[in-house]
Image (cartoon, rainbow, N blue to C red; front, side):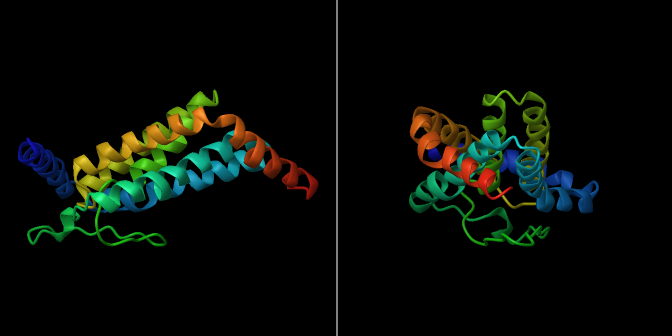
Length: 190
């Protein structure tokens, strides 16, 4: 069964990786810069004094990225497609390049957690905007051989799961983290 899933993952990967021949520079820049839209949205929400959704989305993204993804990645190690000899289409990050295993995708987990958080906060326009950005970014990560499709799929699930887990413990998060941070920001004039 596992061999069948890996073979399917490889077939889907090669299908999308063949798109790299069309506008390769664009795919590379989307793969690199797509994730940087998230901090811009979070800062915009913070400056617009809509801090609770921004903080909750940030916490969900960090929980997915550094929490759940690291736990899963510790037990399941899978090298990136760029490790294959016949692929040469690197798209390295400016600030957060973490060469090495790719399972599950940190980009997919982080971006999905933030997007789902905004949807659950009732911020539908921003949620749909982030859904489009997330889709293009994770697709570009496959096209540029940064991830296998399975890495992306599990990353998307981890992002959604992190929001589900945090929603179960939402009251303590609000009481001990969100409310004190928002109150502190008000006191110092941010």
